[in-house]
Image (cartoon, rainbow, N blue to C red):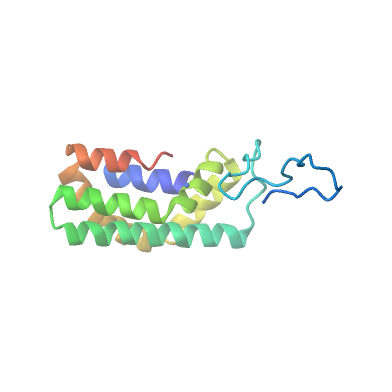
Length: 152
């Protein structure tokens, strides 16, 4: 999805079954064990509804605001900024995974671009402080590593 990628690029330049047969041979589990994650479904994601897009964009905006607040709190300390970025990324893993699934989807790209244009003042305000801090800390290895965790 372009909005998350575009906005951040601009600022810087995602139980077993039992044997009921009476046999002493255990049956294999029918569901994945709780510690196992099901295999993700391959292929394109389903079309995104307007409500899903609005939710995704609002979550993106909240993430941008959190990054901006972290930049303000870091007050030029690149190590603090890196820690804040890692925290925000961790808190928004689901959002980032959704963005990654829809990356390159022309319809979603078009709709997120329209949403961003409509909400440009909110988006810009959220990214300005972070963008300034990112410019100051752009060469810092810890900050670069934190930003690398965006994995889009």
